[in-house]
Length: 383
Image (tube, rainbow, N blue to C red; front, side):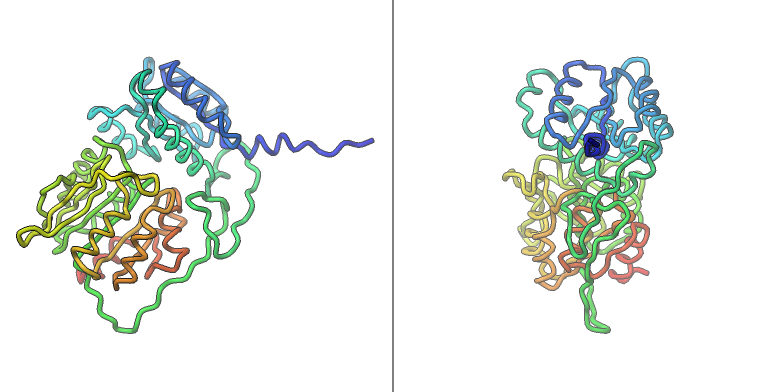
């Protein structure tokens, strides 16, 4: 009697394959237990230095590599380009403690091709109280693991189920080759729209996208406010790198800071960035309220506050990122007369945040990354 074909191989094949590279056995064990608690994830290797990581990447071709920065033999920043070369298409997530030095190195890693960064607990006492880290780690791995370019890995990957037209997978690229259906908002021919504020939201893959987009925003006569999902310390370094790489002045927001035209204000990690009018000026007010959409900073409180201060003429740009942060805020922007544009699926690392606003019919335009800057300049009358 013939037996039915086994499905265990297919199930394993469809798991997200993760490789850990960290010299701390405690950290590796902690992260492994978190990841393997989810049946959709498989840890294929756990290694102690970057040199082992490079060799193992060429052998396993994992979907994701979680890469420490400071390690013996070969550190993370040296190993990163070698890992990317060993398995083109692999997603590398830098795991860093919250130090200024590590934030600087992590930002360099993002320039070199790392996809995301995550702040890991710095010692054993923090590890066992790190519930937020567990949730964030699983969200990042699962968002990046369902990839539109999985066929670029040498490891065979079973095809995923197609996305039904008009549906949205909440930050997960469930259909590698198929686009999600959406409709653009229609406007009256010749309708004049001159925004008085540019608001940007981004998350996974955001830093690389921000450097390209913001380079188009030199000499703007309106403020630019930005929420990028990043931990404390990292957002200050991000602001410094925006200034260095785009020639547009960027600062991390502080309570009481007066908002000026032409500058980029980055929401600091661990706070929501909001605004208030005081003495005829618009000032930043940092909000220590609870996370929204699992995020702090979150795009939504920034947009809600911006509407109350600047009024309806706001142009919002939603760039690559997992989840749907910014969706309620963008609905309010559109209802008030503002406009929303989003990065398209093909150029997004994760089409979560931009996909959410596009799929809900909020966008005037959905554009490839390279077209967003010129589109925004035209909207502000700067062709």
